View 1 (cartoon, rainbow, N blue to C red):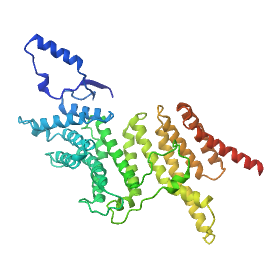
View 2 (view 1 turned 45 degrees about the horizontal axis):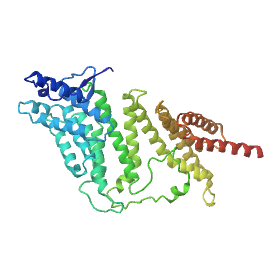
View 3 (view 1 turned 90 degrees about the vertical axis):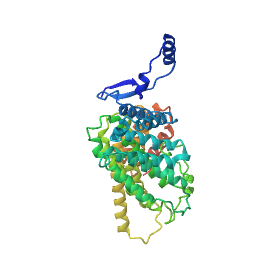
View 4 (view 1 turned 180 degrees about the vertical axis):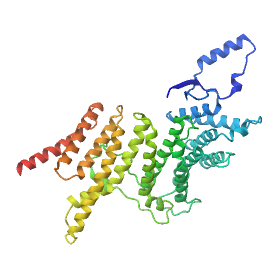
Length: 428
């Protein structure tokens, strides 16, 4: 969709200011020429003079920025507060504008990142803004905004106060709060199909924010109290298994506020993946948003496959110390675990293939990692396994060239494994 760009001008009164002398006019022109203007992108069919449209454009500018300053957020909040306070009746009419209230609430909730002393205040104020809506019930967009606030509030206001041995009761039930956020997020499907909302960048950005925040929440709860590096992956230089073995796994007590959530993480991860797969077709292919969402879905399938892969590899190639175990039961477990892991990794590859960004070699390497994982759980020295490893090698070679040999050591390992197998087959 074509877009128009125009300078931001929220207050009409500023446009109407007149100078009384040519000298003042000249000074004003000079000031305008030296002061940078903030341009905002508007959808082609939007009214550029509508204040809500301009505020949405400003929010989109924040989302696409480095987000290292609260200047844009404060600009939105101050303007919204001023407009709501107008005595000419326009303030009351804005209480019927769900998109205006949505932007106001989003900006307030985002300020919690920059001012930890006012986290509770900003979150409460953002919910109060949503409740200003004067219609009979909240619209889909306000429900999705509320879910974003809930998902963001849990780690920032509540989890941040907890310790791993904490049994202190907090004033909210975090499990129930997550359920409320999930309930509100159900409006996502109706929201993306509602022709009322013309700024698709705003709607898609809002949903992606929700998904990203909830995905982070799952990681935070899963690794609560652990120093494990969440970013460790294929390109990690850490090749020693000793650190993984010595990594302390924090076991929360049943009375810990996060215990129930931690026990329910698999279900939460599956719920999020279902929501992401529903949303993905709404995004334009070969865009950063499409790559990002496909990546998250693929990673979710890989994460779920880990348990089955580890079970299969341990039982198929681990030590045979337990000779008393029933062999038939072992074989059933081995085959079931292998089947499940192959199915999940294959689904991961499907989405990681969609996530291939021509400008990001890491996305290619991540796909190669999935092919390696697939080969690991396929029958040893089978045609399928060799095909998976070969596919991984070809992708890694491309990624290695683009990243100036970043993945050379992994290619060396793959080639070393292949050479070892050839030697073994020769000896046989």
